[in-house]
View 1 (cartoon, rainbow, N blue to C red):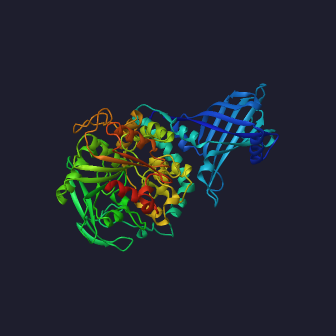
View 2 (tube, rainbow, N blue to C red):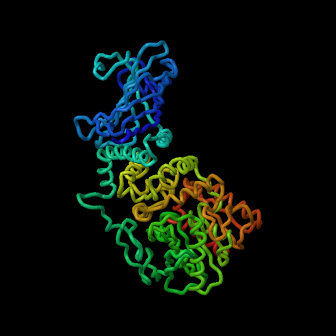
View 3 (tube, one colour):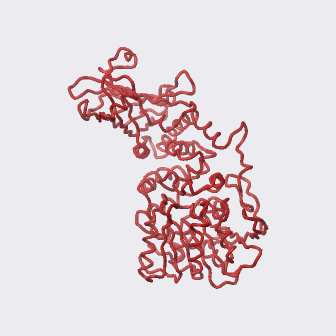
Length: 590
């Protein structure tokens, strides 16, 4: 006999009611005008998960309190019943039901009964459907069978606010004979929840997002960089050692894939790009962020940063380090990249070009890990660095701090990776649940990968760019430019955010535990770029690192806030060639 398993969570909803009113929406509207608020705080418990899953009524208990000044203040629930996804006669419609028995301030018995309508219709929106409770308070303790004759006290609507919903996700707990049993119970409940929503909404929504026309996704129209692979493909295209092509302006470019072996033996590569004419300036290394690839610097815009650098005589090298989605998924840390990847990439460029010095343009987690290399004295050949978004001092919005401190540890017990590609294809129950949660709160565009990226990396709508800065082709192109990123990275970044600066977590290669405790072991000059509207890492991140380096060498380094730019649109914005790239050239040539 299997021991009984239970699941519980806490939910809080707030809204408005109007007395002597039967219409829900009118009750909420007039209640808001009159300030007649109503809320409840409930702990919902499934005491027998096996029974709950098998029972079509999916009934659980609800304990807590109802708050309404007009009814008498904070009033304890004497008995509460919650039903999850009860089927209607129409298979495309389900309901969530609430029935709370309590007493008003004068001791009169009253019942709060509410329902959420989960329906896939032309105007369906999963967020309001699952967070809007049509609420009525009636006289007496009234069961379902006695509802027709019950006298209405008040009607209205209560809602779950987005932040309250996200707090609710952190309250899920399970009881069972072992940690494994408890995790399985949470997973089973999540699978039930996700599966029901998936049936109603997601299949149709994802088909629309993929451009569904009765067949498979239209991947043939996606721009995949030559010599790399679609991050969702199980059969990667072989590397191309040398290739000639044209950029979007019609200029001839010669590309060479240069493999290099990282310090721990991992196979990485560099993409070497030159124009028709031999470069008359030194090598510039471009370093991408987490969960993307070197191709992120070459969005389908009129002029990319690579085009700009080549046209101005630079020898361009794009590094695919261990965070690249063109490499096999691995549980990397910033320490590994700092010690094993970037020093070898720089040495490979020096050996191939014969140059004594290298310049670098670094972004996001390519920037943090490369700064670790520089501060630890591991890349002495690098003399000028243009760093975007974040370097030694990660400062994130409050919601990002909440996610990385509370949601990541929970998800990390169940998953090794997060993957924005789940917006197009979710292979497991848990990935489907996460995708559905993202669809619940992100309505800023119709690109599911764009939404998943914002949820994974930041706090905005969107988080990593401003939609108005992207052309339509880039917004479509980015579906293929984000994929797996390991939980090991998020764990390290959580520690860095908590400390207020970068810290090492593995103690390899002589890295210091803190990267701001002593003077940096580099003579490179740094130019810091910060998007004014970056919702991944706030501009304060770069300001703090600039102030730190400036304290050792006054007036040598520089700091620039990019107005009307965010995080990655600094490189792939439609007007970045006009607004940003001249500044990068100025810093490289200074």
